[in-house]
Length: 465
Image 1 (cartoon, rainbow, N blue to C red):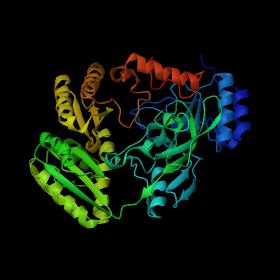
Image 2: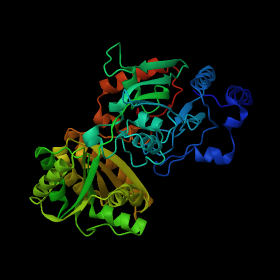
Image 3: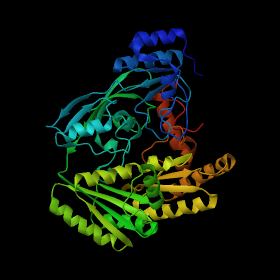
């Protein structure tokens, strides 16, 4: 149903945004054909780098007129293929939308363009005593716009929530080219449908965000990290709910198995504390009263000792805390470096984590697959990596899809969902019916058709064929 880009359309693109911002060379096309999703590659026909909402509007109107797919692209750190040009067309890079437009300390708000790198935004806020807690592992390279598209979370979601909890409003361009200002700079707003929250997490299929109004908070004055080693995965994962039942609200509570830790040691060439322990929890607490944090550390120790604790390490110095976080945030990259892999992004209620963990091990044994899992236990979000290692292509292709389906079926049976923060995108769309029924999927498709009647914006994503 889509058309190819000819010389006439290419000239119109160049006339719209300037020829120096339109690319068809092989190096650029190759770069924008991939993100961090496995080894997938789909080349766009052209890469465009606009700098205003009006330019994006013109591109989308041109694409609608000629039925050309348009794929918005942030930092390229996605893990579900959400920014892959699976049907060719125009890839719109948001890298020139890279300004922090305003930081309003009086109202605790910030106005930001989507091409700002998350870490850059956070560090600018922190220099002013302010805090944006959303903390994806790729924060040093991912764009704020990508965080919006996927409703990113990260370790601190357990206490502070995800991207959606900080979006007051945003400007976006619809697939048909209208520029919409949604939301407001007020904390309360029940004025019509909440279009901002509809766009957050829509994976670049309903609009291209060009400006975001964020709610921000005060930076906590104190922070401490506790690393707890356990004698078994079962004891470790079973302790998670007990920390919360004791009245604690950690700013992060991360779960790591020995396999994940060993892979990280090999990948980085650095030791990880207590790396022979079967599993560990990295718990971060923060606040404005150090005495309260010290009391919370004692509560954490008391709870942990009921669950086969081997060792408890307290990190209070900034460098030591940063070193531990650096090790934790390297786990995903380390595990994926082992071999060809599939990564799933399961999320369940916290108290169901022991059942999910047990089930993953049983599925691993049933299908003869190496599975390494770890993640944000504080909000029930485990990243499950299935590794090919020495399996033949035939063995891998025969087993992996069956295993993924079993993992997702288990996850949903426990009251969970098949994606917590990576999105459905391209790689997970065939599994969507495991989590959602036909009526839910059809309603979402109808919403997509209202926004995008010609299905030109990021087609081939989320919905199964």
